Image (cartoon, rainbow, N blue to C red; front, side, top):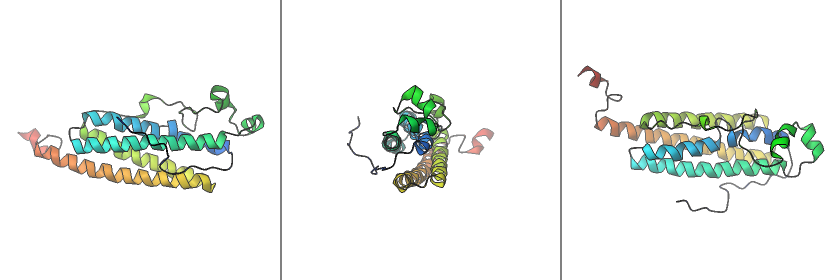
Length: 199
């Protein structure tokens, strides 16, 4: 059970409407490396994680990713809330507008809708943790790319915060991977101990 705190991890206060930026940022909501897939990945993986401490980490980061999803949604909303019909047309926001008006819908920047194929949960501790490490790096790369093409300081500040959190999550998953390898080694698992195959 989660306790919901009615505030974002980082304040979002965007002054200028900009649907062009919104079309890019929405990828971190429903794109292949976005916050929605991250939260679902970690909150699903925790059930099959054999070590409580690592399962707890997956829960903590999964819940934090839900907050990051809220941050992205707040940014897209603020960037599109006052759009005129003319701005919708001239910014190329019309295709999105036709389907969703100014509602928040999880999709990639290219317009591809979110699908459950965007996240993995294998049920193998090592496989899942390697997936998580890669996911955090891919998300960091997307934030890097967004920061390269966006110059609005009201938008860049929360993007920098989110990028920094991806790095912290990557570090925590690295620690969790080492802890898990140590635990598995204690049990002489064959994928940790190559000599197992020769017995």
